[in-house]
Length: 85
Image (cartoon, rainbow, N blue to C red; front, side, top):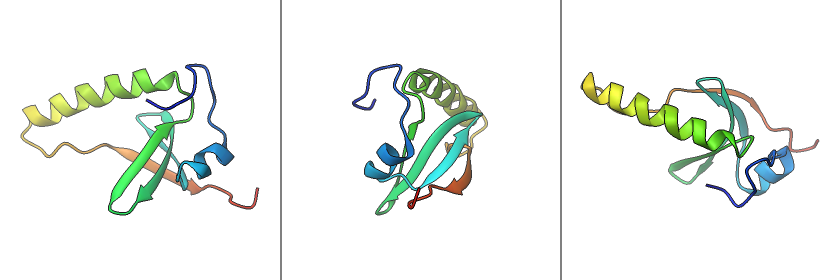
């Protein structure tokens, strides 16, 4: 969980400071996404959505394990954050 209160909306500027580079969504939950070396980092755009994200990812992981598939997140990456904005 991030350092903000539950009802905080993470702005593009804050997302850039955390290392995020793109808008994205995970099962329609809006997130920021970026890279940190070999790792992919992400956070929800509204802190309250962290609970929904965790809930959906938990059930997606169980479902994929039942189908003997590798557990991966299904993320739709959108446009890059406007660094000049």
